[in-house]
Length: 297
Length: 298
Image (cartoon, rainbow over all chains, first blue to last red; front, top):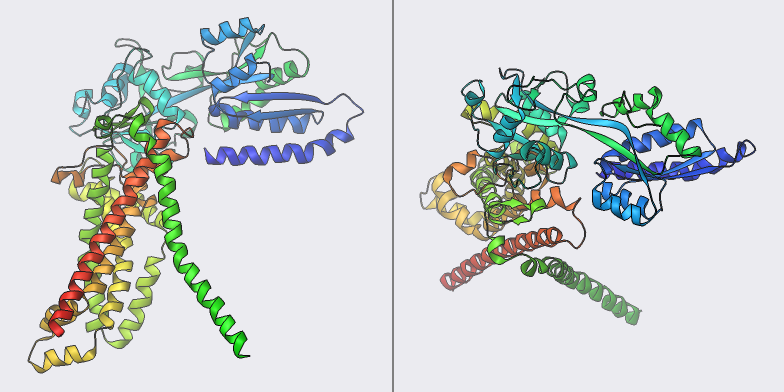
């Protein structure tokens, strides 16, 4: 989180220090447009990378990007203080009602996707699991790889720290299988490692371990598990293709919301974001490019 | 001339006095700040919940027992490593090693003390924990044992350095007296030199323990951070979560003024009280020993 802040500070410094001079040169071409962009911390790095690239190509546009969480971003959109709200979840019905009451009409744009891969040591013979099995492993109901068709070895569960958004997403989507009323928690002996690197280092040398991480961060020498949504359905490995056709279970869309259909500079920016050039940046940052942007205008 | 000298002396004495008192002031301020931020936890969370066995702050489970026992087991393990090893090294350097060896060993040990704990943590993740897993046939090497060994390693230079100074300060006449009475070298060390340097050696142990209990980075990297109650003897071979690692891992993301924030400060308070307790216990032991020695000598 700290480095996100530093990137943000650097970026805002960059924007404020270099913006005026470059826009002054091209001021004759067009009026400088200002886009305010705020929301999800998951997306903030991506949004910053886009804003930087876009501004270097369009010196007349200025984009300010802030994090704070999906809720913060959507609240600002409802209060009409931002042009684009970033969200790593769909807008809630309460928020939609608030928006309607305020005369705001949130329009959703899928701008990228985020998948979480479940990873094990390559020596581990287990290749595929159902979502329910992974949930049972992490909640402590299954304690030996033998029960999953593997060797007779204890299972060592690895997770990110509780403050990581990925941890919360994994808890909600996998452990609780998306159910809001389910109060299942991680088994108490789950190792909470402070970084992705810690998880990867442990799995690389320990055949007992199971862990999860963002698809873009999984190194080639570790094995990803193919996951079935329900017992009997097909086991699917995470990849850009399976995330996009929604057959891979642990993936979510990342959104930007605008007030009404976007116009002018905001529309140009959003169109640029879903175009291949900007989606290239998505892949570089470890997310999954949204190849079929279903709701882009 | 004379007057300016007394004036200068006056100012210098006051300055030294002020820096002496400032230590008290800073400790008091820090403790006050901890109390202000930590005490609200007591009425925001029920006492029975604070002493529960589950720590999962994002769903309001604030059981401190796993963290408390985790810290204790790692510190005890580290002490068991650091004390024999540290005092042994100090005795060797001060009593047995030839002069040239001493000249090499002492600076080397002090250099070891300057090693950043993150570096040790890296060694722990990449070398020690895989080795422990294979060697002891454990499910994972990220355990309290790995933390204890590394913390012991961190505490050893402190123990050696202070204990060696204390042994060095024992008058040569004590040893010569023992030899003259026909004591062997070992008897001299065990029965004369070490007891004579007792207060310094105890200080060395306490400083070492203090170093171990407050260490954060290494522990966070190698103990696995699983908040499990560590009360069995076998817990040393399983992952644990310490108080320091919890504060370090969670403080960065916590909302200012929330219950979780107050509980983290409460943990800081508990840590502070523990090290205060260790220090008081140590100085009272040293104090009593001194009094007894004075009584015998008089």
